[in-house]
Image (cartoon, rainbow, N blue to C red; front, side, top):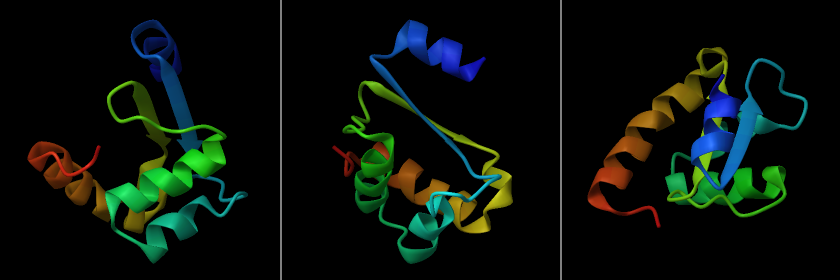
Length: 85
């Protein structure tokens, strides 16, 4: 449902599932809490730039990775303060 929503309302959808860590996805969240760095690394895995204004970022099964859950507060703070561009 989220992928469909993203296709209808965003220029791009970056979907990642944290229930299987085949690509080392969890390591991204274990090594940094910096949203800009996380976005850069996710962009690499996604194969194109993730733009916070035009890309819907879906972190499916995020509850499977405590580090990813903990970084959400940094995303929230930095987005509100305009830090992530």
